[in-house]
Length: 194
Image (cartoon, rainbow, N blue to C red; front, top):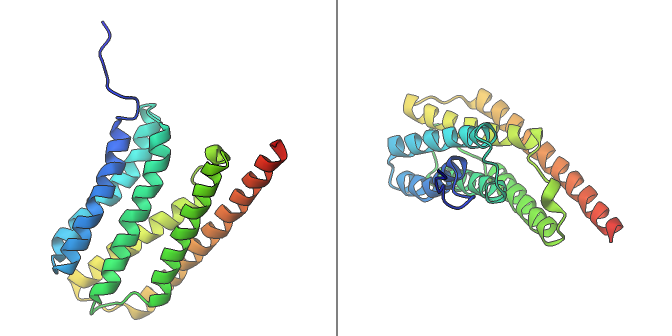
């Protein structure tokens, strides 16, 4: 007997990506209202969904086109909303410098714009997350969790924070350059086929 499983895009991994997207406005609201514990819990749970969604998609053989687009969009909204809120509330332990926030926003904007161009040219089918991209996402998440830890512990780690910030920023720049190089190669390949 066949059991109806619903549409192909309704999967556990896509649900986890959607959950991360859904958490973003609640994290913003919590931070703006100084609900630090709620914001930290939501962010930590959202970070775990990012670890699980790709793994479950592969493990359960539930990889979908919807998931390929939903996962990176959820990451970008989740992380940029969190960074913007943390920068706005001005932590009294360690503050995110304006240059770093601009780097995050510009990187995400360029990657989203480039991805849109590749989809429009039908060249985006081979554009999978790179190791540099995954390292950047992990670095962003660890940095934000560290900011929460610093806030709760009333810790002022100026030197180590600057080192961590430089490492995450360097990884973000490397991943941006790598994505631009891969995107340009796909665009050239697409035009050659035409």
